Image: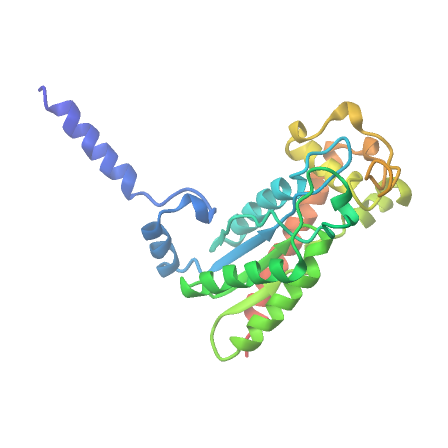
Length: 263
């Protein structure tokens, strides 16, 4: 009897170890688990690009990274045969010296576009090497879009004779959220364009701890508090709808590109 419990525990441990990981995030896999997932048909991977930038007095610097990781995870789960690479948190945000754009605010971290493109390119090259055939670039910031397009075009031209394709998802960002808010009767100037209602509402729904609710100030622009819009008009209900529109748009476009991007 003294050996029954240890043997049972060993059996349970072996059973647990044999289970596939219940996650869509690449960094949560072991290399053997990943190999087996790809061999079993999980050959789509999403590379989320976020950013570390000022978002006004009310929203944390990592806003894009938190949001894009969540949305990429939901997209992968809905696709059913996709995983999510680690978020790229360092993206073009302006010049360092003299500082321009968001670099005028403490905490912003920038990279030159060519550096961002090289990191993104080699992430895609790495994933191709490991068996992924559809590599989707999911950019959560406006400054990421041009470089994503450049990388996708460059690699697709190089890999035209292979089965591998890189997809720059254009329907995801900024999506229809801002237009939808206007359709709900919100003035355009309140919706805003940076650290305004779109992302503030999304975090109100997803994780209000990333907001300073007592600092939801109307924006005074890029030379003021860094906000363009009126985040104080945001609601969690708005955020839920905006997130859903972005996720659904990315799922649809990825499905279309997986079929239509090849002869």
